[in-house]
Length: 275
Image (cartoon, rainbow, N blue to C red):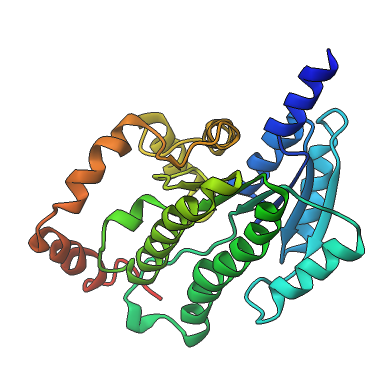
């Protein structure tokens, strides 16, 4: 490879990526996809056992480099502690993937105070603080990539999903605005709004998960992560997986309140979904 091509590759490809929620599901698959491209991974999670499992799984990827960091991103000083760790370890990520999150399908008033706080801490405060902290560093270098994980639910206010959809809506609007602010600084910001992904986030039984995959209601996390990483590295601004999901966005946005109330009456009020 010529020196000019080498310089181009270094300019157009991240060398080090920090991935939150890296211990399972989409996070693990994103780590795998980035590692396959020779990108050093800083894997962040609250789950020490999950990080250990990730390191073992990534051993099958040739020349992969994984630096684990166990930290609770809901803590008020989490971002400061994370940035201090990077500085002390002399690590300079040029890509941030805000993937950590939680899910709940139940009436808002049934959520515990801790659960309510976790939605705000993970989906709003942590995403904001990390995006700003890394955005400043990336802008100063004139290059960088930020990937923020929203959800299809950000387009569809629905009973039982109020905190999830509201905080994911924040991520979508924040990411789009941040992308416009950082574009002239050479920083790419992508917001992903995936539909159902076959992870443990939604609590589906293995049988239901297999059925949903077969009929195309949900997507395998490895396929989603592969396309997400590809789009992010190309500097794309959004990613909605699947033609069906892209078509359904205007449809779910225009759902009449009667349909939404049907969900409430049939599922929440009848106790199908319980705290």
